[in-house]
Image (tube, rainbow, N blue to C red; front, top):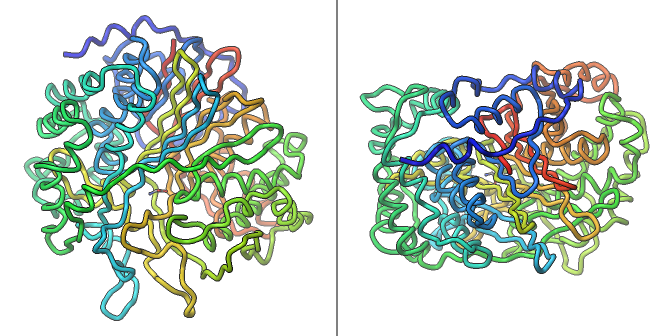
Length: 596
Ligand code: GLY
């Protein structure tokens, strides 16, 4: 059994709570309460859960880890406590998340990682995104008449499965920045998989909600619906196959997933998926490679907001929103003024218009990365916001670029699943990683104890519009456009904020808003992540139901916005770095921050 007493010694200091953050924490409706979910765990975990419930940040001096499940955070904390690096801790956290939060991320999926290296004082980004199989064609998600498939007809089964990137990314991060023994980083996950863990309220409710789709595949049904019934909250669940897979990865490295019997099991599962087979092959797995990409960094109020460039649209779109808003004094307006939200909402719409036109895998299509975040271009776009009403016409702009560009607008759907890990280690390295299998439970296919992604449905199902090609169409070997926005905010060359979230294309709004809340409105990270959400991507302003955000519905409607009240299930995990470390975990999910 894992020694769960170690973490009881960690220091937790709660910060005083601002009134609006308390209201936010009270008002949001998490899908499942965390009070009972993890009762019986270590005192440190319970204290972190209690702090989150009451809207308080976690304070530490040396290191901190924030992620979506206490068992995963404990695993990371143990690594950091023993002197491991943020990269080491990430491996342990990801291995446990794949077990206890299997619906969101795992070794069957992909991820993006942003790393601040304390020694070289540089930011590096690694792309562990899934790739389209070599046998995939642009018409992968179209019927015989060339019409797009219904979304879930495409998702469920083998067709949507891309070559996983997460195992290779874990290994590459450890190769570059790890200090701990690779094999030992899987110990906690293996022990939990063999001994069993308690099914969390969120996992139980998502299984129940998705039972029909999960029931379509024998292996998946046997695991999540034993005896035909959805696993209940609190049930003890073992996953010996996952333990065996992790033992192989611990022993042989990521190659254990990309070749040999596990690779064969993945390919066999995808190609023989009943009703909807896919085209993934052993060659696709064998050829998979993590790619280092240039970080996209955008100036904002004396900071540099750095994140993942294409194939993610995350850093470019967050950067465009912030770059436009840099031309307005949001600090003076404050979070309660509808004018702040008019500016944020329409800056976001303008950024999403560019995202839909220009952003895709830059290895396949030319993407005007520099032009899209050029401050002059963004100031020109921001001039449209010099009004007092919602924009009536939102169109893509024309960023400078030395390629001829003619792309049609994309309509790819990205539904929220995914998970975010933020870590700072004792050496001052910082890691921001957003990790996913795309939809909740991905393709619903399971092989060797883990779920396989449906990331290929992040491509546009259409290839052209009115004869003009769409940048994010399917192509063999291409990586689907993402919205994941793992971010490290820098000031004077040093990291000051590590942040990211799940949430499909709403990730962009969640991350941008939390950065504004922290930098412009002076909120601590717990207040910033808990604050009610208002998200505008394509015109409709989504306001978080059951929160103070609903009070802005009327003034925004008067300005001309169409508003919609809805649950907005972000999963923000953030660490602010100043004299010490300050951690925040989203009250809408089950995660915590722990530090020492
Ligand atoms: N599948 C979610 C994303 O990559 O944005």
